[in-house]
Length: 274
Image (cartoon, rainbow, N blue to C red; front, side):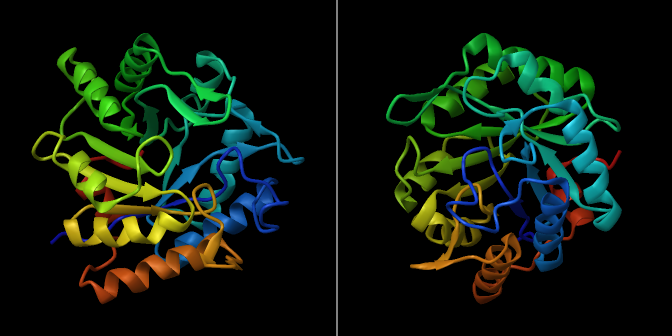
């Protein structure tokens, strides 16, 4: 089985210091958390950025500042900017993260509208999805196809039929939001993607490491981090993203998977460092 790629989603757009004091807002804090994850074994940093007061932003300048600062201390890490941003942001606002220099080698592409709970709806129309895919292809950015349920996988396959995606495609199954976080659901998602595709799985809250174990055993890859889960175990807040990555590394070793370096991850994902 190929080596395991660990991605660290270090801050997201919704969690706050009130939830866990280690959630990063400032550039220095984001660098600290990226470095802790990288040192523990993460090959990919899934990046949202914040203003210093914690407000989520898709500002091109803020992304540029954070990416440059991370690369100073983690020069070979894969940085994966989010194009999801936060609820209520426009498409143009969200795409700013792909406009930094150098152009990102990897970025997320959300493949459908999602209910985040209560009245919170994250809207992605078919036209938004297809346009994002077209722009990423033009810019030479590998999309990670973020799928929160089976319907989003089907929309990604529609984009592929339109010639908007390169093969092999890479999927990220985000479970526990709109689709249940069970091994049954993970297996159903994995069985729904084209042969030769690569995939990562993550899950929200207490399901994070259950799904991580399933992904490791099934030959996929894993995402952990504060965006998805703030706890190392029940009742114990993680002190850093690095602690969550360390737990994933220990789990992988117990289950017989070696950890991929960033350059090994690039080969697995068919992306080239820019």
